[in-house]
Image 1 (cartoon, rainbow, N blue to C red):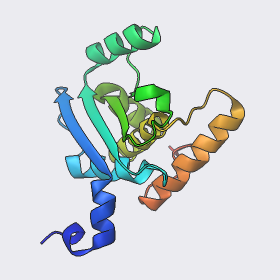
Image 2 (cartoon, rainbow, N blue to C red):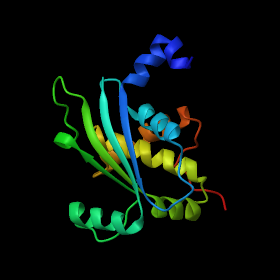
Image 3 (cartoon, rainbow, N blue to C red):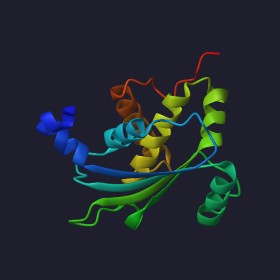
Length: 168
């Protein structure tokens, strides 16, 4: 019997998130589904009772196309977030959104920053989930709030502060 089935609190927490995963990437060093779910669930804020999230992992060409078509930026980026209603809650409705992780960009950034690949995937999953919930980093105050929240969530998952410079 799974732990969540024996523990009612864990059962309720597990039921808060329905994550659908699709992989359209040739990368072979991707995180396991259980890890992606754990990272996404950890980023859910207390006021989110239910979330329906699709997570797509793509290669650079598709990542670039999506970034160009939806953000007007013609390059592949690490994570894209598409929230229903721009992250504003719809009373009585679950949080709905799509996350797109671009595997080659995530891998390149992790290597450049001297970070374990799993830690970088965890960070970007948390970052994207926070965007889906309305967090942003358009100005300094928003960025500080979001970065502090990401750091706290990642620490709870056992990962170091993603904003500290890596020691070469």
